[in-house]
Image: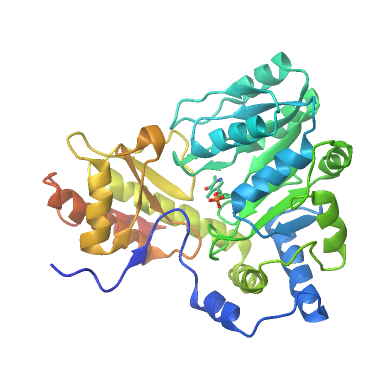
Length: 381
Ligand SMILES: *Cc1c(COP(=O)(O)O)cnc(C)c1O
C-alpha cells in the first residue's frame, strides 16, 4: 500500500492554517520598526481584546504558548509568593513545573485525569495557603479533553486575594471565556490552536491587578519582561524583533473570526464537538472527559486495542493525523480535534478514520456507524 497523497491534520494543535492566512504570511516581509507594522500590531491587539472580551491590554510575545505561561509566572509572582495550581493533565502540570522552575512554592489540586476541578476544592486550597498570590488553572485541558469551570473561580479568587491566571490556549477563540466578566486577571493564548496559525506566537492579557503585581515582582526578567512589552505595545512596538509574518497572519485570522462572527465561531465548535461525540457513542466508544471541552474529544481506546498503534495506523495508512494520549494516558485515549479551521467534513473524516483504523486493528466496528450518527447530529443542529 502506498503512502496517502492527501493528508488531514485533525490534532488539537498545531491546527490547519487557512489558505487566506498562509497567503497573507507569504507577502513581502515588513520592517518591524516601520509604521506599517505598528498598524498591524495595534490592529491585532484590538481584535484580540474582542476575542478575550476584555478592555485590558494584551501583549504579543514571539514564543510558543508555554512562553506566555512562563511570562505569567515570572511576572505575576515574586520571591516569597506562593500559588495554587490545578493539575489533572499535562498542561495543568506545566503550571506546577513553571512554579518549581521559579522557586514558587505551590499547593497542587490533583484532579483525576479526565475530571474537571470542583470549585470548592479551589476555595479550600486557597484557604489552606493564604500566602498564595495566584491560582493557576487551565480553561481547556487539551491533554484530557476536559473543560474546567473557570466561570466559577473569579469570585473565589477575589475573596481570597489571589489573581486568577488562566491557560486559555485551546479555549480563547473556541468557546466563550469572557475575561473581564469572569474576573480573570491574566489569560494566555497560543497561535497554533483556535487562532489557525502556525506555532510561534503567544498573547497574554493582563488586568489592572495583574499589572500591579508585575510592577511589584522582584523576579529577574529579560525576554519575557511584561513591563517592557506593555510600554512598547502602546506604540505598536515590541521590545525585540517579533515573528512579523505570524503577526501579519494573525491579523488575517482574526479578521476571519470577525467576519464569521464570534458567536458563530463558538457555535461551530460546539456543533462539531457534539457531532463527534454522537459519532463516538454510536461506535460503542466511551468518552473520557466528565466535562468535555469544545476544542477536542478524548475517547477511551477500547480494551484489547493499542491506542498508539491505532493513531499510527490512522496516520500512515489513511493519512489522517489525530492525537493519542500523553504521559499516563499514552495508548489509552485518542483525541479528535474540532478546533480552529474546522468544519463538518473534518468531523466526518476523523470519525471515518477511527472506524477504518479500529477495523484494521481487528476491533469490530460497523462501517459508517460513527459517520452516520455524526451526519444525523449535524443535520439536526
Ligand atoms: C498547546 C497548549 C499549550 C502550549 O503549548 P506550546 O507547545 O508551548 O505552544 C498550553 N496549554 C494548553 C492547554 C495547550 O493546549
